[in-house]
Length: 417
Image (cartoon, rainbow, N blue to C red; front, side):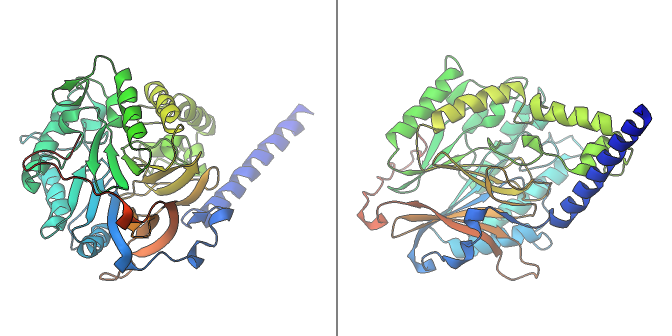
C-alpha cells in the first residue's frame, strides 16, 4: 500500500511539473496584462506636440554593445533624437557588468571603459539631462572594495559628460537628492545599494552632509515627500520593492528542478529537493541581492511605511532583468532592468504589466497636467521606431501652463538639494 501511495505521489508531482513547464514555455515570453489593463490600446495619449517633458528610465545596460549592433541602445537613441531639451534620462544602475569599472591594471578595465563609452556616445548631441545611479555590480558586486569602484565610475562619467551632477547620489552617499524638472515634476534619487553593501560606505546624504544614524535617511526622505506632496514624484533607485522575478523569489520550473543552472545554464543535473530548498532560501532568507535579504527587507519595510503615506509617487528600479509595472496603495512601482539582459518574470500577482524582454520605460508629461507611462521595446528591424508594449495615464494634475515655474539655481550652483 505504501508503495502504491508513493508511486501515485511521484507520478502526480511529475505530471504537475510537466504541465507547469509546458504552460510556462508557452506563455513565458508573452507580455502579461492584468484584466484592468487589457484595453490599454484603446486610449491614446495626447499628441506629441503637447508634451512638456519626457523621462527615459533605462536599467542594467551593463552588457551593452556598440550603438551599431545593440538593438536596445538603438531604441534609446531613437528616444534621444526625439526627446529634445525638455527631457531627462536616468540609468538605474548596473551600468557595467560584471564588476563596474575596475582599476586600470585589471584585465576587465578596457572592456568596462568601452561599454561606458558606447553608452555615452548616445549623448554627443543630446541637450537634455543625463543622470546615472549605481547598482550592486557597480559596487564590485557588493564586495568590500566596492566604494573605490563606484567612485571610479562616477569620476569617469562626470568627466566625460562635463557635469558633476550626472552621477547621483554623489560620492556613494545615501541620498535622497533631488533634481528639479518643473512645478509638477520632481526626481528624487536614492542609493539602495548602501543598505546591503559590505566595506566602507559613507553615512551621508551628500558629500559633507553626514547623518548621525541611517534612520535619518527615512526622516529626510519623508520631509522631501511632505514638502512636495502636491507634485508627481519620480523616485529612482536600483533595487525594486515589488517584483515578480528572481529577486522577488520567483523561479522557473527549470530552475526548480535544475538549481545548478543558476551557476551554469548547461548544468542540467536534476536536484528537485535541493532546488526546492534553494527556492525557499531565496524567497524567505535571500542572497545579498534579493528583496528577502534581511538588511534589505528591513530597509524595504521602513521605506514602504513612508511611501504609503503619500500618493502619486512613481518608484522605479532596475536589478531584475525584465519590465514590470504595479500600482499599490495609490503609488506606482516599476522595474525597468532589461537594458542588456532578460530573465524570467512571473505573471499575475499585484502586477498590471510584466514582460520578459529587453526594453525601457518612459514617463511623458503633457500640457493638460497628465503624466503617461510608456513601455518601449526594440523594433525587430534596425532603424524603426521602438515598439510601444504598454501605455497608461498614471497621473492627472493641474495644467502645466498654470503651475508656478521652478526658479533656476544661480549660475554655478547645483540643482540638487
